[in-house]
Length: 163
Image (cartoon, rainbow, N blue to C red; front, side, top):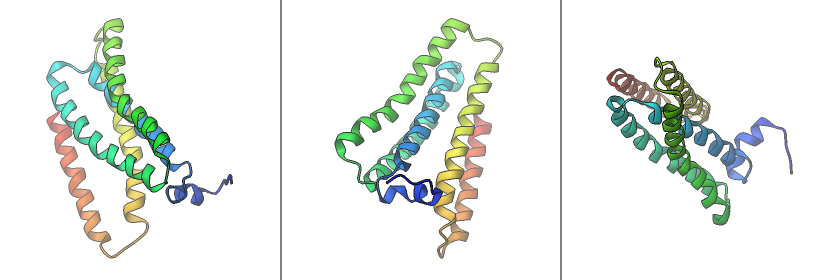
């Protein structure tokens, strides 16, 4: 059954709809851009960026795998789909390295652009997926979740200053 209702799409993880694939696409593009950023980064900043990507990739992979499992997508479909996500960051690193070889390091505009796009995709996923799930259904501890979200944003801001 094809539906055009946004509410049906949002609730799709419960009935095997398009939501797991949309999340796969969004996270894979984000991971590809993060890999590109790592591939074009200088050696000084690459170590910190690699640690951030690895920490983030584990949590994102768990969330993506859980979404596919909740949607009851068969394992023979789930594994290749998740391999797309797994390979997106290394592919980005390879493409970023190739871009540096072909275009040179330039004046840093390319690095800034990829970092901005990577941060933008992260904010998009966070605000439209994670925040929606955590705050809009309601519940008894919304205040506590809000405090932890602010603490997490503050820690990420400190990490960004450190990088």
